[in-house]
View 1 (cartoon, helix red, strand yellow):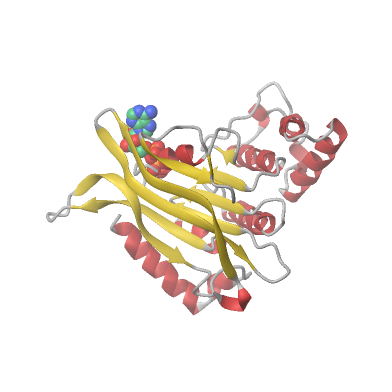
View 2 (spheres, rainbow, N blue to C red):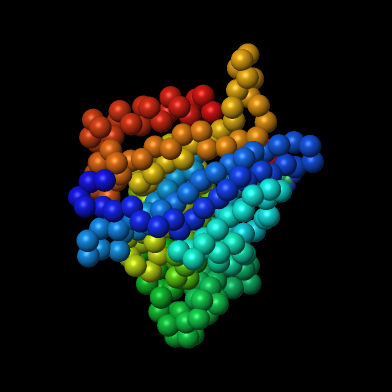
Length: 274
Ligand SMILES: Nc1ncnc2c1ncn2[C@@H]1O[C@H](COP(=O)(O)OP(=O)(O)OP(=O)(O)O)[C@@H](O)[C@H]1O
Ligand SMILES: [Mg+2]
């Protein structure tokens, strides 16, 4: 580990996870672990990317990790205490950004803040601050129906930052955003991961470039293949790319370095085989 980073206790563990829909295996004997990382004097957050092709089972795994769905076999343990995950224990930004249609943008955020234990005033103040940071303060009194897809997405992400969970799971946070909005969301993800409010962000995506730009570690989810190259049902983590170990994490502007481009090429190549 570079710069005195230390790998500590496990804070998320998925063991032997299998999920089938009917007789169709989606995930099979999937294992993964997230360990706490520290650096002298700094609370070090982490951003982990879960990458895989469409339909492979990313959202299914996301739902299991969030406690929204119970796998057929195996268990998911979270926090330093390693307790079984339950709905509500981790922050979740779902793939289709559900918002309350009868509340304004600031109202939607405030509800999340109240649920996380803030007073009405504190929740509103925090909501306005977040909307500014996401560049959507002009829409604060709009209703969800009045938002563009990208604005709606940023509101849904901001809504989760109202809570101070140690884990935040995001399903496809970059889809439908233009390059500038992706950059803005990425910068914000990096920033928030390194505050002590929130330590680990897991991003589910098929956007390889955006994932590598923002993540410290990337997990590749895919299926095994038989001798004739046909995929065998039931995905698991096929490869882990530790960007931190390669010195490619926690640095602004690293996307233009030759080291980054080499890694990007490797991950793209591995992705095509998933
Ligand atoms: N409730 C369900 N009932 C039956 N099959 C389902 C259900 N939900 C998902 N599936 C199937 O399980 C597989 C995995 O779906 P999942 O949504 O996890 O994929 P994904 O990797 O998130 O895809 P995408 O990148 O398109 O979002 C797909 O083949 C999908 O059709
Ligand atoms: Mg999905």
